[in-house]
Amino acid sequence: MDADLKALEQKLSHLISMCNELRGENAELRHSLNKMEADTAALKANMAQASERIETLIDSLP
Image 1 (cartoon, rainbow, N blue to C red):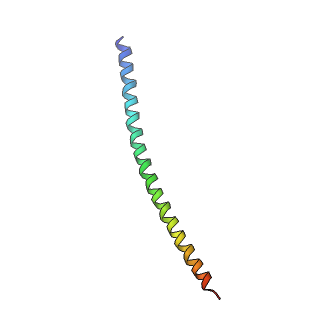
Image 2 (image 1 turned 60 degrees about the vertical axis):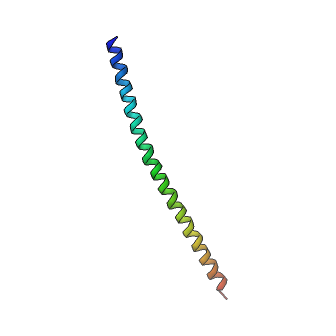
Image 3 (image 1 turned 180 degrees about the vertical axis):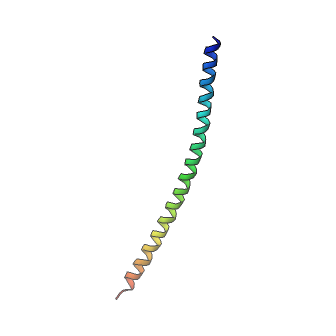
């Protein structure tokens, strides 16, 4: 009976450890995702600005 409880305790300890690791990994992934989303938004804004400039240049051509 003690051996079963020890085995269960070890498995539970391992499960808790894995959960903590996964929480940390998820936090890192969320941070990376937020940064990439911000970068994407900035790139889209730059592309829109460049498109406007090109259209302005095209419209000014004779």
